[in-house]
Image 1 (tube, chains in turn red, brown, green, cyan):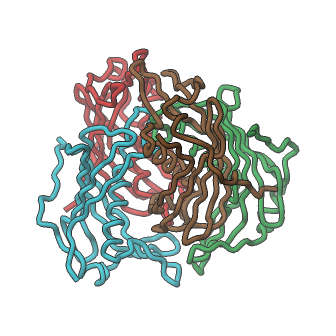
Image 2 (cartoon, rainbow over the protein chains, first blue to last red):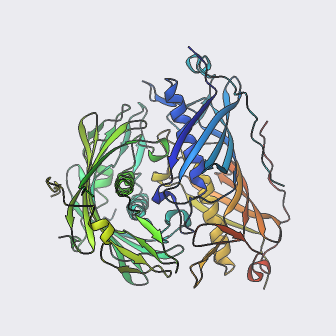
Length: 150
Length: 150
Length: 150
Length: 150
């Protein structure tokens, strides 16, 4: 099976995702990126979340997220999301996500996720990336997104 | 221990809860009512949600919700929520919730919740209300909210 | 131009839309129905929301929503949404929405929206349905959804 | 009037804010921080959002957010939020936010907001911080939060 390093999809800005400033609420970019990531995983036949017999959960909680918002977007705008893998380690992945609207970048994110068991009491136990995932992915031949911040 | 039939609290309309029409998104009234209900339960020493050793979950999923929105409310408005129990059966409760702002009703909801086990595969198994809850609650001596609808 | 009375689309249950009971949060059904309604309007060339030169907003706030939840659905489930117009009046529309998963109904909603100006101070001023909308829609030749509730 | 540099408040983790991994969804930390910021501004008599006569909006959109998630938190956990100003410029502010639960840090954020007019068409026009805000705030005598990230 071939390996994949990036994924592209579109996301419509929905009404409830905007705020009273008339624009998409910033917190939604992190959610839209997560949706794209889950669609990427589905396209590889991998589920981003599974509940085992013993009630434990296997998922990919975020370790940290960095984001930059360049232009506001509005209800019904159709965003292009370009997601790629910028790093793979034993127990974690780093993704970059670029959001565009009508050819212009509107936001960018970079974030790391850890492969974890979520125990029934809510604690996380890190675990290696499953082999079924590792054999389907690779780091993209693309820049790792950088951020302006002072 | 005494029995309780109603609960009052306040909820600030937060920025992310509004939409680009400049007002609180209608879906948030159901969430705010649920928050008030959970605060009511906490005040009785009852948790609205518990995860058992076997990974099964004990909670109160909604069976149905009826709502009416009378006046829009905006960012930073401080809402008064008045919640009361309008019916108790073996396995379910019915709540009424009235939302006011500056003395005027802005929305009302009536909804039923069922006491359920949520099994690890996501199926619901109805169960009787726990005795620890039943002995703390009673139906309020108040009208059951009605709705205009044609 | 032909008139339309109903609309069908699909909606994936996204991760952030679920809650710690492991299922789609009930408040999301109202949001998913609204998304379907907006997609329906777009398919007719009508926008569900417009900001005029004077800052006033033209939209379709909900007057009331009735909902019934029959089966829980989970992360990554692909829902079928069937939305139809069950009533049209001078200033409002009533929609019915049925959600299915793998051929079984999981939830139903019925709700009315009013055509309104939202003034800059947040007040709503009802207005007639625009002619551009009225000439594209009609009431569906289908049952109006009913609800179990005691 | 005195100047203020920091703010502390509490936030209960609400049910709808959790996800099917059983923990608070990461995107909510940015929302909770924004809520704390708005409460801070209210305590200074400053509104974080105003709509002018001409329909233009005056607000503080985020330029970028950096976040790190250290421990999961669950439904009904009561979080302590400590927010402080780490930088002030002509047209923007930088905030740091530390979230704790039972004395342990669970997450941290650092983010910049710009003072802007949001025009009726959705474009942002940066503007200087209003004098009424500038005279009430100062940079906190505290570390600027740093982040682990590779």
